Image (tube, rainbow, N blue to C red; front, side, top):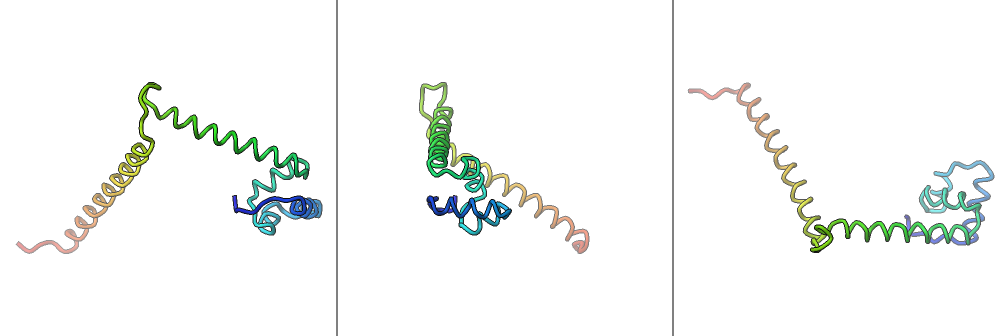
Length: 121
């Protein structure tokens, strides 16, 4: 979302551009909203109340999914597992993978350099 509130005049402008055959991505750019917003406005028949209801339902569904994900992060639904620590573990694993890849690339590079410039013994 691009932080632009959809109002009745905006919906009317979207309808006019849509009826004129303008592509949705250009309409979105003109009103500084996402293409998904344009699709939602079109899906609701260019009616502000229908659009508002649709967006509210979507937001409620996303909030419910987010709260369900926190419940799934509990162990056997008995003990609460700190979501922050899970996130930190994922970040740590990602960083360790990147370090391992960097080490592998460094070893390969050193090997190539040693082949080109062998040590004098």
